[in-house]
Image (cartoon, rainbow, N blue to C red):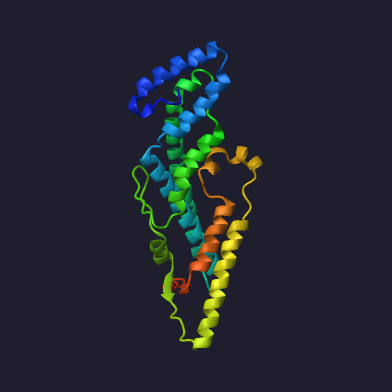
Length: 265
């Protein structure tokens, strides 16, 4: 069976071939061999739906962006003594509501992906064979996580809502201004470059030392964690990479307060 190229058959033909094969394997008491074939079949022939994978990755990027803006608002309002807490809470509440919406869209797309996997495995599940969770996780995360973390890959949504970029959100909530880098003497410039190089090296080493998620936690996170959804470790990596990459600092300030209308005497 492993020599068969199932890409040459229609889904219905695949189903009939595998069903007949599994019935014979059950009659021969060879279900462990059937389970091994199941894993081979999944890895070699399952093709994830491109648009669903795209939208899951798009939602994940959007959630990371909104979380970053949420953290920035908390920090900037905390740094300015005259900041209006009412405005701060309004901003945070708005962002949290949008995060719930994006997360709901992502959950829905994950359900669609799970349905697609279930249909692909139907011939096996009818014979009481379950797909190996680690195999499924490897296939799904291998397709989604690179799209989430890659800055070079542009994503446009198919079935979920369009979300603003980080720059658009910054312009919405803040007044941004770039600080020009001062002209340094040659010696000072060289020292700065060396320090930056050391920081980059330390950051790279820190990323390699980041502990992996304990396998015992996998049953709790289940399918969501396996496809690279927002986790504490990933969040730390994002923050670290942003600190290292930022060469031209930006200052964020709050919009001017609205002046209260004078009360009539």
